[in-house]
Amino acid sequence: MATSIQDIKNTYPLPVYYYRVTIAGEDAIAFSDVSGLKMGYQTITYRDGMSHRDGPKHMPGMATDTTLILSKGVVRKDSYFFKWISTVQLNTVEKRDLRVDLLDEAGEAVVSWTIADAFPHQLDAPEFDANSNSVAIESLSLMASSLKMDYPG
Image (tube, rainbow, N blue to C red):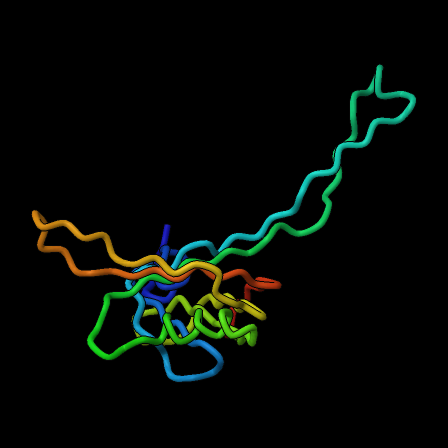
């Protein structure tokens, strides 16, 4: 049981709504949703001469692909996603590094995810519905070379 303010601060989970995303070291960009921060490995199944008795052996293989999805509201004259995915059409894709920081109440990073060499591979326009008054949200799917976690401080 937590007995002091510092114990509570160190042992209670952080809320997921307070985060910061920076792309290519630029200023933070406001996103309504960030998903796909997953790390995993393919599984290799190996059968040897004793597999009939001991069963197959499983080992970790290559890292799985990192697919990140960034979503944000559509804003007038803000074509950041479109400009980035357009570099693919010109066959001059711009790979960028991203950083997602989960922040504490003071705005300090508690957990950071660093995504290396990300490039866009799909841009989703908002869903249009005349019966709704929701905000128009666009999403950009990114493929990346690697994903690393860091616990600063």
